[in-house]
Image 1 (cartoon, rainbow, N blue to C red):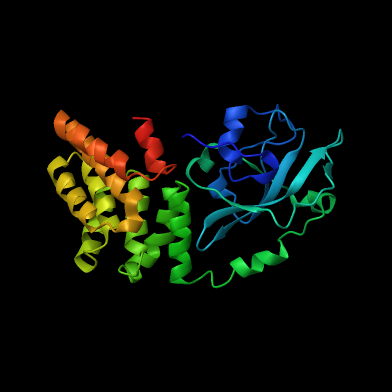
Image 2: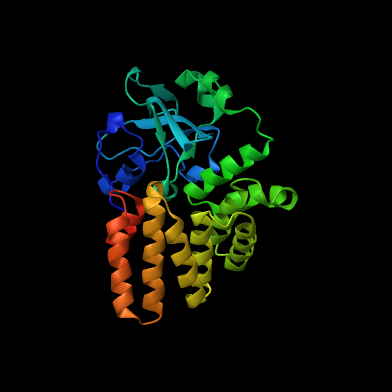
Length: 290
C-alpha cells in the first residue's frame, strides 16, 4: 500500500510502512518475532531504521474507539553488556504521542521488552494512564470493541476467539454479528460468515456492512449471482459516511463480473469503485494495485 512519508520524530503512525521503504538496520539485540496483534498491553520496541541508531519504544494497548494504539515513550540504545540506555529527551506534549496502528501493521514484527529492563528505561510495568483503558473488560461491549480492533488490524483468528462464546448467548447484540462475520471472512471460513450474516440480516436488514460481508463470502464461495444481488442491495443502503464501504462493494462487484467474463460490467463497476473510494483509503490503495 502507498503511504505518505512523515518525519520519524513526529510519527509512529507511519513507522510500520516506512520500515520497509527505508530499510532496517541489522538488529542483533532483539528477536523481533511478535505480531502487533499478539503484543497488546506490553512495552514493545520497533526495529531501528537504517539511518537512526536508536530503538523507538512505547506501550501498546487497545482503545475502545480507535483500536490498536502505540504510545511512543521514547528511544534507547544498548551497550556491550546488553543494558538499555535511554536517550534523554522528552516528547513534546503538544505533538501527537499516540498513533493508531491498522492495515499493514501486522507486516512488521516487534519485540516485547522484558521487565528486567524497566528500571533502565525508567518505566513501570504498566503506565499509570493505562488504567483508564482497562476497565469493565468482562462486558459484551468490551468484547465487541476488541474484536473490531483485531479485525481492523487483520487478525480474524483473535476476533473469532473473542466472539464465539458471546454469540451463543446474545447473537443479535449491536455490532456482534458484523464483527463475527468479518472475522470469519478474515480466516476464510466463508460458510460460517454466510451463516452469521444471513441470520443477522433477518434482524437488521438495513445494515449495509452486513451485505458487504455476506457478498464477499458468497463471492469467495463462487456463488456469483447471489453475490451480485447482495452487493447491489448493500450499495443502495450506504449513506454519505460510508463511501469507502460503498467503493469496496463496487470493487467486489467488478471482481464478480470479471469472474463471469463480463468485461463491460467489470469496467463499469471499477469506474464506480474508483469514483467512490476516498483518497488515501485502503480501498483506493487496493484499486490502484489492480
